Length: 249
Image 1 (cartoon, rainbow, N blue to C red):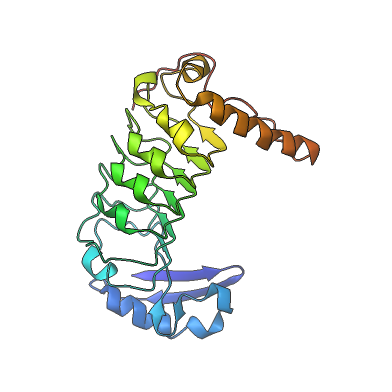
Image 2 (cartoon, one colour; image 1 turned 135 degrees about the horizontal axis):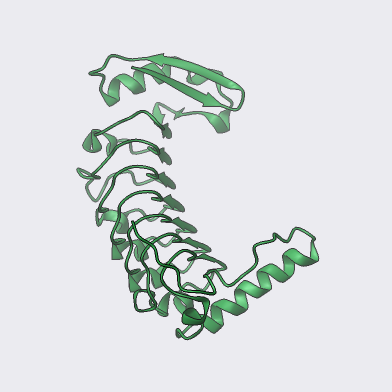
């Protein structure tokens, strides 16, 4: 198995056996870690701090072993064929800040997110998820949540407790008006960006939800600042379609 460690213009090849363990990967990475600048290192003081295994066709991974990487801050497993996330206990990955599980085959997520108090960014787009765990609301540091193009029929009301959440991306799902709790708009006091396009609900549906007015005021202030600094994008809208969209997946 050939893997590449890539940072900027630098690329370093690692060659591992088909039966290689996570420990083998760490040892191989240790041999090249010193060539990276400090902010790009994958190891710090003997601990793995970044692990990126994208587009490797992985069907399974040793989650129990992965959970023992106590210093890991960034985990990216995008573009694989993973169907499950299991074997992670309450003390697993205590320093994790960024998690990318996009473009896999996940049908559900575990409930241990409540233990990830440092998690800031999470991307689970392009999977087959029908729901998000309510425990996500306990992630007090969560700033960005991306769950586009899944099979979500509702959002957990507990997400309203994620008071630092700034961006919520859930386009291309099966969300209806009944599946979007108004508490998210009022509880997520930092929320400024909402992308809920390509769902079977409209902007008018959102306007009727409790808490929408508070969110709408924050959204407008954000885009007013963009206009003033002339960096306004062309896609300014209310985060949803003006007409109901049928989405089959």
